[in-house]
Every structure is written in C-alpha cells, then in structure tokens.
Image (cartoon, rainbow, N blue to C red; front, side):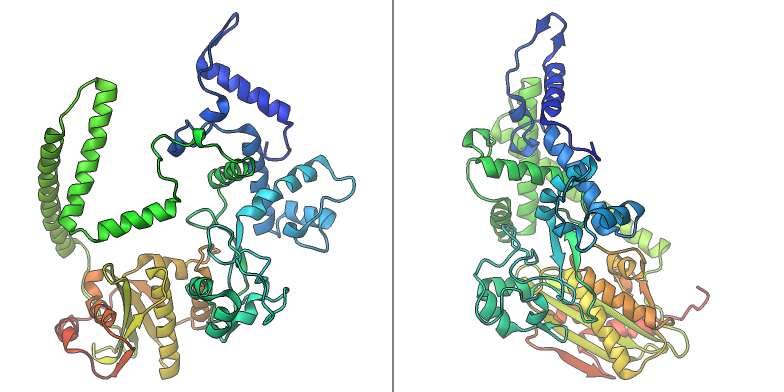
Length: 490
C-alpha cells in the first residue's frame, strides 16, 4: 500500500469486508447496515467513527514515500528515482513521463496530496516565488490573494521583499496589501541567509504524518464534491471555522478572572460526566446538584494545588540548584528572558550581562511587537545577546535562559523542521564558529534578574540600555546573586 496504487475496486472490497465485520456477518445471514460506510468513516470530531477510507489511506502512504524522497534526497531510493524520472528538475515539478513504471505512476499520483500540504519556510527567500508558492501562513491558500502588481514581475522571489535580514515594510504593503503584509511581518527572517526549506504545514512539528495527510486528503475530497450539511455533526450548529471559534472562546475566557475560569472548567467537566451518567447508567442528576458538586470539587482541587505548591517549593529548596552562579575567571555570563502579558498581548525581553564577580556590565529592556510566538522572541533575543558579545568583543561567554526548548534546539545537531527553524540555524552557525561559547539552561528561580527586566520592558515604548548600571527594581535580585559563592566543581 505504501509502494503501489491499489485499484479502487480492491479498496471498495476491503471497505465492504470491514463493514460486514463491523455490523456482524455470518455465512448465510446478512446484517442490516444502519449507516453508510462513508458516513462511518467521517472523523470522530465531526460525528463519525473515524474508519479509514482505503483509497485515501493508500494515497497517504504513497505521499509518505514522496515526502521521504523530498526530504532525504541523498538516500539510495531518492537518488535512483531522480536519475530515472526527474533528472533535470525537482520532485515537486516532476512529470509522469513516457511509459513509467507502476511504482513511479503510483508515487506520482500522490504528489497531488504532497503539493497541497507542503509549504515553504522562509530563509533567504531566493527559492520561493511570491505568487506561485505557498509561504504565507494563511490557512485558506498560503499564497497572496491579490493579483501581481507592476512593482514586481510574476516570477519575483521573496528575497526581493527582504534586505539585510529584515522585511521591506513599504514594499510589502505595496505588493501584498496591509492585511497580508501584517501577517508576513510576523514571519521571522534569517540573519545569516540560510536556505529556504519545505516543511509540512498541517502538523505542530512541521513534519509529515500519515494522520494529518489522511485528514487533509479527506478534506480535499469533501471540498471537491461539496460536503452536504447532513454529514455535519449535529453538535456543530454554527457554521464557522475552528480558528474563529477558538478566537471567540479565548476572548471570552480572557475577560474572566482566574477563579471564574476554574469554575467554568469544573462545571463543564461535571456537565460532561452528567451526560455520560445519563447515557450509560441511566441516572439523571439535577442542575443544582451539578453546580454544587462542581463547587466542592473545585475547592478540593485548589486545596490540592496549595499543598502541591508547598511540596514543590520544599523539593526545589532541597533537591535542585535554583540559584544563579557566578561564572569562572575571565568569563562573562549572559542571562535573558521573555515575559508575556496576556491582557495587553504585549511581550517584553530582558538581557543582563555580568562578570565573574556578579557585577552588571550591561542590561537591556526591549519591548516587542508584531510577534506571533514567545519562542520566536526568545530566539531573537539570544541572537541580540550574541551580537552584543561580538560588538563588545567578549570571547569567553556563557549564555543562560530558563527556556529548555531553546537550549535543546540550538545545542542539538539534528535537522530542525520548526517554522521558526531558520533562527535556530542562524544561532547554530554562530555558536559553531566560537567553540568556547556555551549555551545552558537555568531554572526560573535562578534567572530572576532577566525576568524582572523582561516584565519591565512590557510597559516600555522603546528599547532601553544600561552600561554598568541597572534598574532599581532588580537591585535586590542582583545583590542576592552577587552573594552566591561560585562553585567551579561542576
């Protein structure tokens, strides 16, 4: 199934066997099929049972082989296929050709699905066509909606929208319009000019998965034939996209205090349990008792949280190192952090540079706007810290932050597929060029100075820099860190 296209007749026979098994089948007795198998194959969140459509599943498995050829061109199978079927072009532009083998005909038929799901991650922009390629995170098309303007020709590349690692804002707004330009501004740009990369646009880790590709293929089929309203789940009365529904729900939740949000969550859980109790145990619980049980359970939950917090603090104090450590002799240590305010949706970043005595050499407070994800800010501030070290000619440097994801991503040598992976590639390039630089993780309790600077930056309108000085708000944290005795035994 992952190498050849199965005939549709065979796929239908397999589906028929599955249906007979599901509804019950004896040799001389045929059971009634109360629902069509197509309806049974609808996803669970849409009211079906999620049985696989064999034809779509076959396409998905073939698309997986195409993905391997695309992402691992140096493999033996990919090399042979390229030499035989698309020697002078890439896989995505390949043609079926004359008298193709059964295997290539099967794989080529699945390129339709791969082309639908693969999008570009912007690096230097030299391989991405502005108008023909998928590169803008618009969930409808991934392409600009406007027709090409005369400022740039139809074959223009994304590189023409960038200059020195930054977007050309005026050109963006002229070519794409203000709405799409605002979305493009959120896309991080490579400072080192790494190559563009094709990633999978329908998973959280941007790597192809059979599950996501299958659902994408089913969505395309329903879109082409026009899915009727009778196939929709009876629980989905309002016709809106998942993104819009989540946005409305988030806005409602953001306006509630934390204690009320906890009550809403506990009440929803109790309503769900009440529904299950009625269906499976035939026991009906009144609304008043549901609310009272939710209040009681919420109090128990809060008490357990208080006890757990006390235990956590005791474990932290006795089990793990939570204090900031002064660096060794002739070593500079840089700590940075990012703070996010959910109410104002603003992000602030803080960087502090200290010597072996714990004395502050430089600290920065940087408010950030037009940011899609805090992790992007973390990476950008690490890049800023690296540039500061280069400008000040610090040679032996230790970098510390409390974002373990960032530390692992930069220190890892494996290929990174994240949509912000161009920033990680930039940082890997910088760290590989200076072997004595060290990037390490520290818990939040040992990163209080940088965190306080980041929180302060949220309320600022412009970047602030101090040299051999710092804010009064962080004085206590700086003084405490200076009092910590260095431990060079580790």
